[in-house]
Image (cartoon, rainbow, N blue to C red; front, side, top):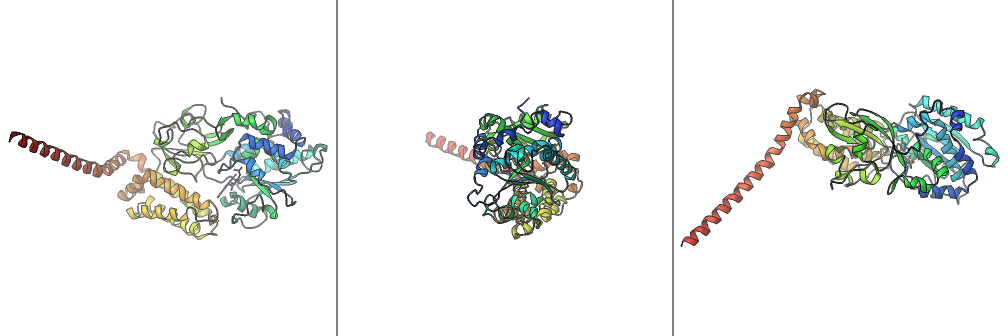
Length: 483
Ligand SMILES: Cc1cc2nc3c(=O)[nH]c(=O)nc-3n(C[C@H](O)[C@H](O)[C@H](O)COP(=O)(O)O)c2cc1C
Ligand code: SF4
């Protein structure tokens, strides 16, 4: 069993209640933080090497040190609990099971940032979790951990939980801030970054639920202890929401650095494939990250063991690697159709685009349309190149990273599974059956063989030419020798 930082007490009965949580050492980190200088807490977080668990993996201590303290304006900490990335469900689990750990993390982190008004922004669909958090916050107020003069320290903090209205884009930090201010959740152009101009124009730090829940442990045990877990710049533990064709879907806390193979195959985690069907592909970090084919999942292109770390998962760049992202780990067996999956993701991003910039607004629509017609057997070969072209024109040309998030899955699907897109063009009648890969594995093999025929034929022609030349050369030498 690996080290547990977040889930150590998750199975303790009634751990969601204040009394039980406190009996397990809950809120000790607040007592300790109140006696520390705020900058010392920031230093511990820097030493820990903790990287943001919301997807981008930006170092948390560094982000905290960017907060503008010179302006003298009030500062805010905002917890991003919008969790809407397809395949990711770890924050929901954390908040449902351990609401007081989030409240404790919010208080300890607010002390470090010298913030006196902090927020948790939770997605609208998590209404029952909202109520769980509301109750935990009320209990914290009732026990003197929130409000004026916390535990006689002279430090004041108010914490509110606010609900979104079901838009994925409100997970983007600047859109979240707009939404929190009561406006439509449109991302802002950066710079200025929230650390300088954030909520109500004040310096603001936005952090993911899991990131904030790691803080109490770091304060209690020190940044160095946290940094001892994991490998290199991937320190600590990480929550992974595992789903798809595996035996044990669920939320797991892993020590960063275990092998991907161990994570997928071991009974401690995913438990291997759900049935005897072979592993086909994996989306390792939520729907936005590139899909990896089976041959690049356990080993990198350099034939090195692929690890569950930020660096190893990205090894090979987007050509042969991917990202650990938000930890939404989706496993596919050979019954799953990559074209359908790509269409499904494209549909999502088109629906969720806020529409501010044309490459994203128009481009995601085109991605959806073209993947739809390929999936349903109405596409042609040019459509595959058209898709490639559209995604290239979106990537890097938008206000926020939703555009990239829509482009990357399409690019990776074509890069690694082009033959499947071609199959959809060649056999339009067959792909109308949703379970075509399950029903006709032989057709797929035949198609792959057909794709290989031409290169093999050309190779044979070149080989034959070479043999004839050798033979002629030999004959010529033989003639010269005889005369
Ligand atoms: C479209 C989009 C959606 C996002 N959704 C989330 C989300 O649901 N939760 C989250 O923590 N970060 C999300 N992010 C990342 C945030 O913008 C931000 O980087 C993150 O909350 C920072 O926290 P961290 O440093 O602790 O990871 C999203 C980003 C984009 C572009
Ligand atoms: S990239 Fe898309 S979601 Fe982001 S601001 Fe532009 S239109 Fe809106």
